[in-house]
Image (cartoon, rainbow, N blue to C red):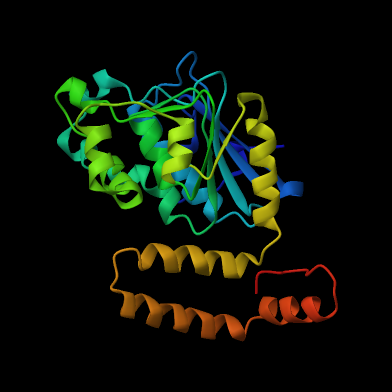
Length: 271
């Protein structure tokens, strides 16, 4: 395992003395894990939001990494943010919160959130910014800011509305209602809902599945889907066509076609 000290980022100081989380890189499996560990509830401090963004940006640029996993130690993913920190933070700092939390969405590589137990507030918002969420039977998702006289401030309600519609989002946000992992799976928020003891195995399986595809095609698909989420259908189809055309000249596409006809497993190189 490689530790965070080997990561490189323009703002290298951000990567020093990580606040409430750690990073592990398994180069053999092309995987990086960001692990929340501030027991018992893995509260995410204000400084950690800046650091999480910097770490994800560094991992995005790290050639050893194909897939990033955001997970936690203990029985809860995160009960949310440091509430006192909101009162102490400057308006300028608060205005950056959504940008920091959106780092998984901006990352060109697949990002998986492995959720169990409490997944509240910014913990839920970070997970919503990831590409895939795996929940367990113990998972509870919530955006409880109404109880503090506030609203979600890091993209939570906006992303949720895109996924489940305005009615269900109002039900969750305006009532500070908790939804179970099973409900999240049924509503399309989570891609899987497994027994709590199976979360690690399900995460491992998804990592290996994602690694089996062309990294170039995967990056292209993620960017295309993100860029066209709000686009009219005609524009989305046009952009999809341009991306498809560019990939047709790639080495990975040629390898994929040759492997298909040769009835063998493709060896993608990302070019």
